[in-house]
Length: 107
Image 1 (cartoon, rainbow, N blue to C red):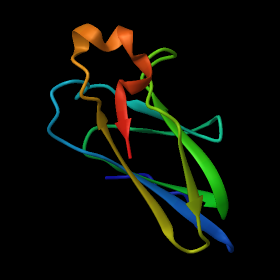
Image 2: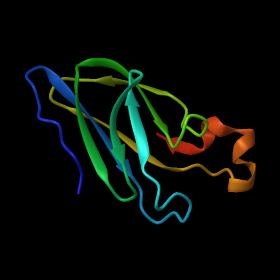
Image 3: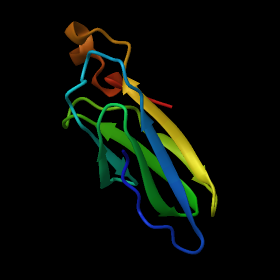
Image 4: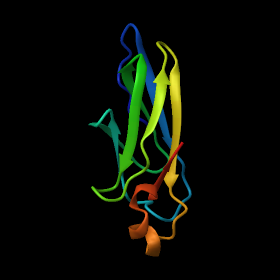
């Protein structure tokens, strides 16, 4: 149920899994940015594999320009998946505007 970019020699994979079962955002698709560039989209209970070069990469998820995750830096090794999990943040929707960069939890 996920998208997969074909592996390249010397490439690594960022594997992102979006957990199921959260009522908030269950119909929304999160946009996935790697190093500031749109790399894909992920829906609830989906896994997305992104082929990237080995080395350090920065990942951020967004619903729109304001509501995002924090940016996560990770080291990707050739031939090994670097795994992340996302889900809606713990902030109640009524207070999401106060801390928009914690709207999505990314670990």
